View 1: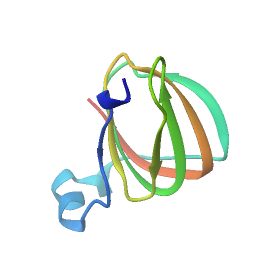
View 2: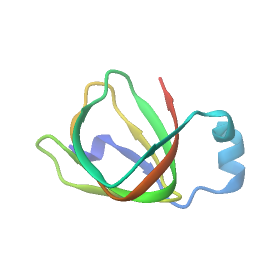
View 3: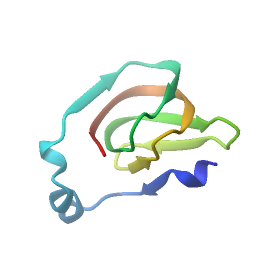
View 4: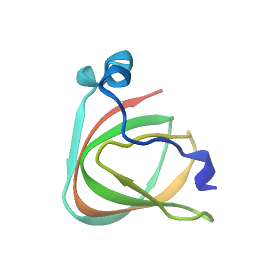
Length: 92
């Protein structure tokens, strides 16, 4: 099921500009673990930290600073933030 999460590693500055990441809101969270369900799709760019996302019934996926991830609407998962996280995000 983690194959439903689309990841681009080491995003280039050109790609960040194309996406308009600098205009996206920022979310920060300390080391923690919690369940999450996506009501709508979310794309996020990690700018600091590390998180292991484990979809229900799926394999864990580690995301690190520089990774762009898109999560599908309806996906339930557990977030395990292993290093304080800072990310830009957008829904839809």
